[in-house]
Image 1 (cartoon, rainbow, N blue to C red):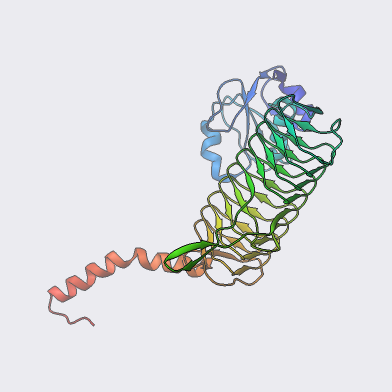
Image 2 (cartoon, rainbow, N blue to C red):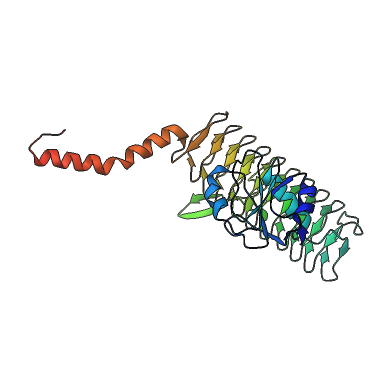
Length: 344
């Protein structure tokens, strides 16, 4: 990437308000990490100190900014974050485009329903018998697609993804490396001093436009289906238990675990390292703060919950504030008792 600031401003529909039009940027980075020659962006007042100290050669800034950092060129754009994203999209790394073809070391089972001239299958990938693969699907090296599995058009499985038997993926689903769809649910009955495995005979259904991160596992249902709704985005290292239902357009962040038969509504946000107990419901539009623990049903509504057990955010903040005052209160009690004051 080498682009003059005048060209960059034209590309973004912005205005160069500080700096030489002929100056060139050759890379991009955050305000904190940027060095000479880099382009960065500023959009949040919380990072004003970083803007003042940045080593970037040029920064995309919002129209509302009333002062500019020294020795840094500034381009005013309506939305610095989106504009920076556009620059990265144009000049940044791009994965290899889809190209149909079956690697000679791939294994295609009997009765597979697919137009092999319209899919891509990498080295050492296995597509088991009777799988159904739509046009435009890309299956990376080392993937396993089980018997009778269904994968919708334009979906992408990065290397070493597993989609177990009879599971179903919609269109434009993205599964990152190490993702496992359809492992057995964790189900046992304790009988005669031993744990007896309960058969997990259901499937996983992943609807269209879902993206699931590396190392995430979605267990097959004991019966029926574990279901991930349309447009939901799931981070790396998330565990979703058997018969869980996740609604449409949810965000589930890394380290979260959702136990069996829980129901998550639409447009729910679950922050990192949260846990949802089995057989409880989280209503649509709810946000769970980081490390929340849900032990009972939460009704739908644009509310934020935090803590363990999860409660409305203001209630949890009052609790945290109260706990933080305990050392001072304890010291006061000891002082009163030392002075002969009886405290109950």
